[in-house]
Each structure stands twice: as structure tokens, then as C-alpha cells.
Length: 80
Image (cartoon, rainbow, N blue to C red; front, side):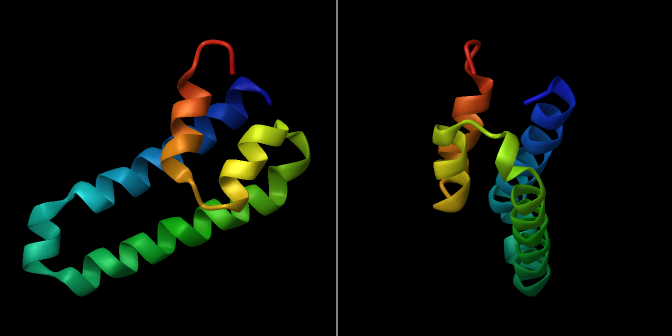
């Protein structure tokens, strides 16, 4: 996986975490937070469909199982 692909995936995974962690948005507009979460989830699914052939077996497993926190940890490891 190229550095560009890694950065694309990292940005999507981090955006998902940021949306989940936005407690202000959840309190103020839960439906907006839900829509944002759906959007980034769809973006992750699309990214995975387009790039699954270049992923390691382990990262592909994390993405297939929607283990997004594990996927982020995996790509942030120096040896990934």
C-alpha cells in the first residue's frame, strides 16, 4: 500500500472517530451526527471496495469486519 493510500485511509478512519467523539454534536443534533457517521461509513466501504486488492490480509480483515479502530492502529504501526 502506498503512502498516499495509507493517508487516505487514515483520514477516513480518523474522521469516523472524530464524528463519534463529537459529544456537542450528539447533544445538539443527534440526527446530524448520525448522517455524518453514515457518510463516512459509506466512504470507508467505497474506499475498501476500490483498494482491497492492495491491502495486507490483516488490514483487509479489519476493514471487512468493520474493525475500524483496529485498522487505524494497524496502519499507525511503524512496520505496517
